[in-house]
Length: 345
Image (cartoon, rainbow, N blue to C red; front, top):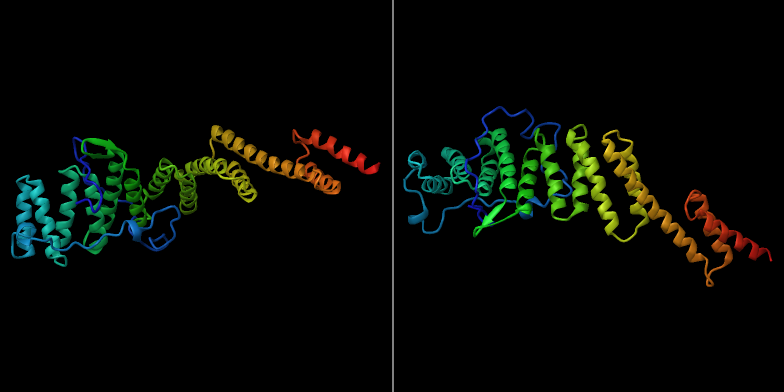
């Protein structure tokens, strides 16, 4: 099942092993951490894009429904197919159990088996992710939450590495992969891998050519996980993303001033590498130059036949007060002196 998305025919030769090692505490929701109900700027809407519908019995139940009369019997039947390595048939049998007896004790076991087969045997990481997410959303109390969410994260990583193949053509599935990472963070904001997942989300936003949204995710990462290595990486990447936005957008004084403030903060944070410091300092010089250019153009605007000399003098004087070391300062001083001499005649 791909839940509305094209099925991935992965080219991996081996399956990703299931995670059995102990997961660091704090993966599942707990006191003092963020929840999916908190704001996650830069994420797509979970309700609009990632919400799953509950599985229901398929049409033509005589063909697609369960083979047995009870959930226990169906689980045993599906397991027998799995032992015979009839992977597609086993997946279908497990899935039929979940659809026919969704509240049975066997349903959670069957749902996990569907996800495991998709990942480990059918090598369909995208379908596997959807099935693990369904297990976590509908059977969170009947499964090992920490283990499953860890597996979801590893599966999202696999999705990113594999890309998507449809009709033998392989292409990046950037949006689907990003949403998978977002789903993981929303379900496990306290996990050890959450900062890295958010860093990937922001990077994928950049791949989508959405630097402003990427900067928002980088900023949120720094706010949520301030003492992590990912937060330090985000600071530099956020500066680069913000600079792209600044260069693309129409001039806005408030935006430029905010950018200068952010870059000054970044330079004083102690979290930038030497090479990054040089680049961020150059960004700040560029932003300051934009303000200087705007101030100079404003002063020139007042120095026209339609404006009074007093207005022009005031504008030039403000420029000199604010940018006394500017390359344009000598020119401005000369013009200011001319206006003062003209007024004295």
